[in-house]
Image 1 (cartoon, protein in one colour):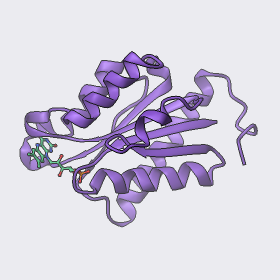
Image 2 (cartoon, helix red, strand yellow):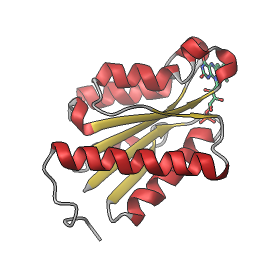
Image 3 (tube, protein in one colour):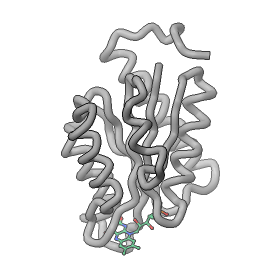
Image 4 (tube, helix red, strand yellow):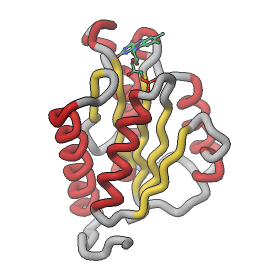
Length: 160
Ligand SMILES: Cc1cc2nc3c(=O)[nH]c(=O)nc-3n(C[C@H](O)[C@H](O)[C@H](O)COP(=O)(O)O)c2cc1C
């Protein structure tokens, strides 16, 4: 399937999760385009056809969504339109030291805003080690399988 992965990352943690997700989805045979929402490539990427949007976000103070992601969501709303919740999954990084009630708050806010049909992937800071890698790969596989089930996609029909 065609996947757009758009992420916001201040210091690189979410970018690394995005990189691991992108590599895994591509290895599974999906056509994935990855963009930083704060780059010049972000808005042109919205014009690309896609089946699924993966949104990745770091969390700002008190669980807030950073401004660059809010701008991207506004551009999505004002351009191609907001995708339905069964076509958007959210992942994020954060730090539990800010309090569990706001841990990865931006990712959870985004998932609620879009009524995402998928569980949020939350990673603490920079992903590291086999446990985080397994968690990321497992989330990707579960998300793709759920999407294929919801949309009656034949898993054999993937892009090379
Ligand atoms: C000003 C500031 C406020 C933050 N507030 C929160 C927060 O409320 N909840 C949380 O989970 N993480 C919070 N964090 C931690 C970042 O979201 C976390 O380090 C994240 O992994 C950064 O991702 P990035 O490297 O992709 O920018 C905050 C970080 C900064 C700099």
